[in-house]
Image 1 (cartoon, rainbow, N blue to C red):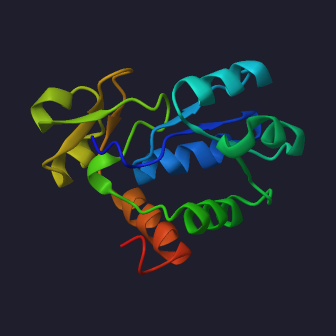
Image 2 (tube, one colour; image 1 turned 120 degrees about the horizontal axis):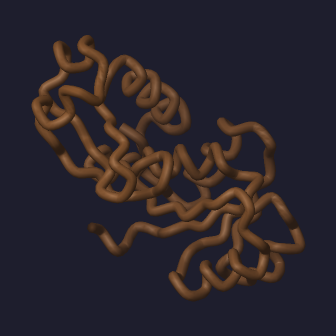
Length: 157
């Protein structure tokens, strides 16, 4: 793992943003009902940047806080990516559900857990080491790349 990449914790207003940061390869803690004090402690303890839309919470976080200014996911991704110089690293993509690391697994290892079409069109699958969710690069991955490249074609491709 690259320890130079920033780590994040997102408050409950930023669940979609946290999933997209995980796709980009950023360790992003997120739990829907985490209390403000718990979020602040986690940010400090694990040296995470606290992402929030709450002005009071960002003030309390001090230099570890980052105010996300928009409700729109695309605008949020753009703001955070530009301000913090974030880049997609496909090799570091994390589980969108639990933030776990992904490992490459063979089609045989997931044969009973994925649609037959996915097995027929993919040689490589990814399994979350933490929760076991299976991923593969289907047409949805192409859509993900298009969305991320629209943020900044030079930075995210």
